[in-house]
Image (cartoon, rainbow, N blue to C red; front, side, top):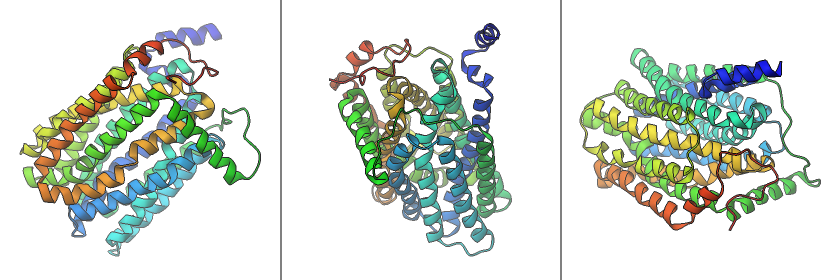
Length: 438
């Protein structure tokens, strides 16, 4: 039996090996449904705001609510993911999204939706999303072998852009073109409900932690969070990369999330369908980038490549404000999507290989927290700043600054030495001292 499984594993392409496991296949189905809902949400939310008479500043307010929701929960979510079976957390998340977006959809189709309703729904959506990443990241290594993590992260890297950033927006554009944004919100709620059902069918796995400190639950949770912070601070490659990405998000995320739909509308004369095409190109680029990385071995210079992919990959954004054709915007976003997701696959595998299993949920939540810490500021500033200095200038800044940040991170903080001293082509040692400590 073991020989047969090993032979099957060898026969499968590297990127498909995780699919031999039934539990992983169910997880992929649930992830696909959840990402589909999130992808429809991106477009439906923008055009629902516009239908209510809103502009960049109003969209900033709604987008900021989502970012704030993520920040409110992500640290606690990491501690929970290291002490509560991750399946329960993910089911609860999908139920919460179903209720929040479903309520907004009902209000929209009955003609009772107001902007503040969208702010509240976006806040709850962000709260739910703040739980997803730590729980999923901590659960995945308990479902599949370590050798399959790069492939599984590649699968997620394909699904996230192709479903959330391509298929979802296209479906949203079609629904809005035929009906209105309100019905699209109801479709989102249905997708999240189906994801909850699939997750509920999966087998629960215990947390990968030897013991949990006794005492008051609140005090114990705070102690857990503090332990994750201490690990982050003393692990140089982790701290440097997170701080770099935090600044990158500040510069890039607001223009992409808030200004891009208005660039499509004002520069090309397009509507929801054109915006969906631009997002779809971003998603397809991400899927191609993820598949490219997942089909190969991790590079020896993984930290250098990852950070340069994220930094230099933003350069096409500098041209976004000067393009007047939808297909050119699609080409630019394709390149950005390719580089972002290629780097993300390396990053997810890096965390799962170098971070001790007992800390993975907390470190994943810190990853999410630090990475998005400045996202609310970026969202809040993007609308007013774009209106003040103009969309073209805002995108030039978003395209150029990340490359400078990437070079500073790689050359100035010992990452070149660290990646050579800690290659990822060997099996991880759970008892190893925190990698990169100096």
